[in-house]
Image (cartoon, rainbow, N blue to C red; front, side, top):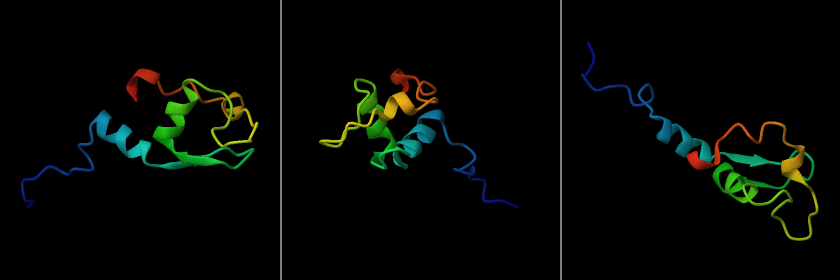
Length: 74
């Protein structure tokens, strides 16, 4: 017998899942610079080069999965 409350983890909406993903820490495997996934996706919508000053790594050009998250969903 349950409490009648729905399991919040089982009822995550797409927006909640995306919000959780945005908080994950991610990094470039080449230059090892990184940040929260949401911030990184936002940066790479307009740039191909690493956001760290003086780093010339083309992080986004190395990412073969970069187009999996539509820019309008963030």
